[in-house]
Amino acid sequence: MKKIIYGLIIFGLTIQTYGQIRTEELSEVVISATNYKYLNKTGLENASVSVALLEQKVAGFNIKDADFYVDEYGTYEVSFYIPDGYILASYDGQGNILRTAERFKDVALPKKVIESVARTYPGWTFANDVYLVNYHDAGDVGKITKRYKILLKNGDDRIRVKCDEEGNFL
Image 1: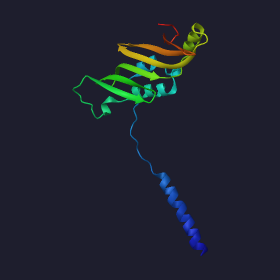
Image 2: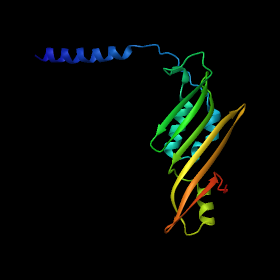
Image 3: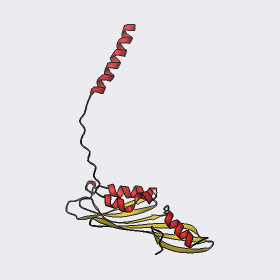
Protein backbone atom coordinates (compact mmCIF):
# COMPACT_ATOMS: atom_id res chain seq x y z
CA MET A 1 0.00 0.00 0.00
CA LYS A 2 2.89 2.35 0.84
CA LYS A 3 4.41 1.75 -2.58
CA ILE A 4 1.17 2.75 -4.30
CA ILE A 5 0.86 6.00 -2.29
CA TYR A 6 4.53 6.90 -2.89
CA GLY A 7 4.10 6.10 -6.56
CA LEU A 8 1.05 8.39 -6.86
CA ILE A 9 2.88 11.25 -5.10
CA ILE A 10 5.91 10.95 -7.39
CA PHE A 11 3.65 10.66 -10.43
CA GLY A 12 1.72 13.79 -9.35
CA LEU A 13 4.90 15.83 -8.88
CA THR A 14 6.35 14.82 -12.23
CA ILE A 15 3.18 15.90 -14.07
CA GLN A 16 3.39 19.39 -12.52
CA THR A 17 7.06 19.84 -13.44
CA TYR A 18 6.37 18.76 -17.00
CA GLY A 19 3.67 21.48 -17.34
CA GLN A 20 6.11 24.21 -16.32
CA ILE A 21 8.69 23.45 -19.03
CA ARG A 22 6.39 24.36 -21.94
CA THR A 23 7.35 27.56 -23.78
CA GLU A 24 5.27 29.57 -26.18
CA GLU A 25 6.12 32.40 -28.56
CA LEU A 26 4.02 35.56 -28.02
CA SER A 27 3.19 38.15 -30.63
CA GLU A 28 4.78 41.58 -30.47
CA VAL A 29 2.86 44.39 -28.75
CA VAL A 30 3.05 47.87 -30.27
CA ILE A 31 2.08 50.91 -28.21
CA SER A 32 1.52 54.15 -30.08
CA ALA A 33 0.59 57.59 -28.79
CA THR A 34 -1.28 59.04 -31.74
CA ASN A 35 -3.26 61.57 -29.73
CA TYR A 36 -0.62 62.74 -27.26
CA LYS A 37 -1.20 66.42 -28.24
CA TYR A 38 -4.82 66.17 -27.11
CA LEU A 39 -3.89 64.59 -23.77
CA ASN A 40 -1.12 67.14 -23.17
CA LYS A 41 -3.46 70.07 -23.86
CA THR A 42 -6.36 68.83 -21.76
CA GLY A 43 -4.16 68.62 -18.66
CA LEU A 44 -5.44 65.45 -17.00
CA GLU A 45 -3.76 66.25 -13.68
CA ASN A 46 -6.19 69.15 -13.05
CA ALA A 47 -9.38 67.42 -14.23
CA SER A 48 -11.84 65.45 -12.15
CA VAL A 49 -11.56 61.67 -12.29
CA SER A 50 -14.57 61.05 -14.55
CA VAL A 51 -13.46 63.76 -17.02
CA ALA A 52 -9.88 62.43 -17.11
CA LEU A 53 -11.04 58.85 -17.71
CA LEU A 54 -13.33 59.85 -20.57
CA GLU A 55 -10.60 62.00 -22.15
CA GLN A 56 -8.20 59.06 -21.97
CA LYS A 57 -10.82 56.85 -23.62
CA VAL A 58 -11.24 59.41 -26.43
CA ALA A 59 -7.46 59.61 -26.95
CA GLY A 60 -7.09 55.82 -26.99
CA PHE A 61 -10.03 55.13 -29.31
CA ASN A 62 -8.92 53.33 -32.48
CA ILE A 63 -11.15 54.43 -35.33
CA LYS A 64 -9.81 51.69 -37.61
CA ASP A 65 -11.24 49.00 -35.31
CA ALA A 66 -14.74 50.52 -35.35
CA ASP A 67 -17.56 48.77 -37.22
CA PHE A 68 -18.36 51.90 -39.23
CA TYR A 69 -14.79 52.50 -40.46
CA VAL A 70 -14.42 52.74 -44.24
CA ASP A 71 -11.17 53.73 -45.98
CA GLU A 72 -12.99 56.13 -48.30
CA TYR A 73 -14.23 58.56 -45.63
CA GLY A 74 -12.03 61.44 -44.47
CA THR A 75 -13.47 62.27 -41.04
CA TYR A 76 -15.53 60.50 -38.41
CA GLU A 77 -17.66 62.00 -35.63
CA VAL A 78 -17.80 59.83 -32.51
CA SER A 79 -19.71 60.62 -29.29
CA PHE A 80 -18.63 59.42 -25.85
CA TYR A 81 -21.08 59.68 -22.95
CA ILE A 82 -20.97 59.32 -19.18
CA PRO A 83 -23.63 60.42 -16.67
CA ASP A 84 -21.67 63.61 -15.88
CA GLY A 85 -21.26 64.75 -19.50
CA TYR A 86 -20.10 63.93 -23.00
CA ILE A 87 -17.36 64.42 -25.58
CA LEU A 88 -18.02 64.76 -29.28
CA ALA A 89 -14.75 63.95 -31.07
CA SER A 90 -13.84 64.27 -34.73
CA TYR A 91 -11.19 61.86 -36.06
CA ASP A 92 -9.38 61.72 -39.38
CA GLY A 93 -8.92 58.46 -41.32
CA GLN A 94 -5.67 57.64 -39.47
CA GLY A 95 -7.29 57.96 -36.01
CA ASN A 96 -5.90 61.39 -35.08
CA ILE A 97 -8.19 63.74 -33.16
CA LEU A 98 -9.04 66.80 -35.24
CA ARG A 99 -11.33 68.55 -32.75
CA THR A 100 -13.50 67.92 -29.71
CA ALA A 101 -16.44 69.57 -28.01
CA GLU A 102 -16.80 68.58 -24.37
CA ARG A 103 -19.42 69.37 -21.74
CA PHE A 104 -19.50 68.15 -18.14
CA LYS A 105 -21.82 69.04 -15.25
CA ASP A 106 -20.84 69.56 -11.62
CA VAL A 107 -17.14 68.76 -11.89
CA ALA A 108 -14.56 69.63 -9.26
CA LEU A 109 -13.46 73.19 -9.95
CA PRO A 110 -9.77 74.11 -10.04
CA LYS A 111 -8.38 75.91 -7.00
CA LYS A 112 -7.70 79.11 -8.99
CA VAL A 113 -11.33 79.30 -10.14
CA ILE A 114 -12.71 78.71 -6.64
CA GLU A 115 -10.42 81.35 -5.11
CA SER A 116 -11.20 83.92 -7.82
CA VAL A 117 -14.97 83.48 -7.55
CA ALA A 118 -14.91 83.46 -3.73
CA ARG A 119 -12.80 86.64 -3.69
CA THR A 120 -15.10 88.45 -6.15
CA TYR A 121 -18.40 87.18 -4.70
CA PRO A 122 -17.97 86.82 -0.92
CA GLY A 123 -20.94 85.26 0.85
CA TRP A 124 -22.17 83.44 -2.26
CA THR A 125 -22.16 79.63 -2.47
CA PHE A 126 -21.56 77.39 -5.49
CA ALA A 127 -24.85 75.81 -6.61
CA ASN A 128 -23.67 73.99 -9.74
CA ASP A 129 -21.27 74.35 -12.63
CA VAL A 130 -20.69 73.35 -16.23
CA TYR A 131 -17.22 72.64 -17.64
CA LEU A 132 -16.82 73.31 -21.38
CA VAL A 133 -13.76 72.31 -23.41
CA ASN A 134 -13.09 72.89 -27.11
CA TYR A 135 -9.98 71.39 -28.70
CA HIS A 136 -8.85 72.02 -32.26
CA ASP A 137 -5.75 70.46 -33.79
CA ALA A 138 -3.84 73.24 -35.54
CA GLY A 139 -0.81 71.51 -37.04
CA ASP A 140 2.10 70.94 -34.65
CA VAL A 141 0.23 72.26 -31.63
CA GLY A 142 -3.40 71.99 -30.66
CA LYS A 143 -5.52 74.92 -29.52
CA ILE A 144 -7.74 74.41 -26.50
CA THR A 145 -10.22 76.59 -24.64
CA LYS A 146 -11.54 75.67 -21.20
CA ARG A 147 -14.46 77.53 -19.66
CA TYR A 148 -16.56 77.21 -16.54
CA LYS A 149 -20.16 78.38 -16.20
CA ILE A 150 -20.95 78.64 -12.50
CA LEU A 151 -24.29 79.25 -10.78
CA LEU A 152 -23.90 81.06 -7.44
CA LYS A 153 -26.59 81.33 -4.75
CA ASN A 154 -27.04 83.77 -1.88
CA GLY A 155 -30.39 83.07 -0.23
CA ASP A 156 -33.03 83.45 -2.94
CA ASP A 157 -30.70 85.38 -5.25
CA ARG A 158 -28.87 83.63 -8.06
CA ILE A 159 -26.13 84.78 -10.40
CA ARG A 160 -24.34 83.09 -13.28
CA VAL A 161 -20.66 83.75 -13.91
CA LYS A 162 -18.29 82.54 -16.60
CA CYS A 163 -14.54 82.18 -16.20
CA ASP A 164 -11.57 80.45 -17.76
CA GLU A 165 -9.28 77.87 -16.14
CA GLU A 166 -7.10 80.59 -14.58
CA GLY A 167 -10.05 82.21 -12.78
CA ASN A 168 -10.34 85.19 -15.16
CA PHE A 169 -13.96 86.29 -15.63
CA LEU A 170 -15.31 86.41 -19.18
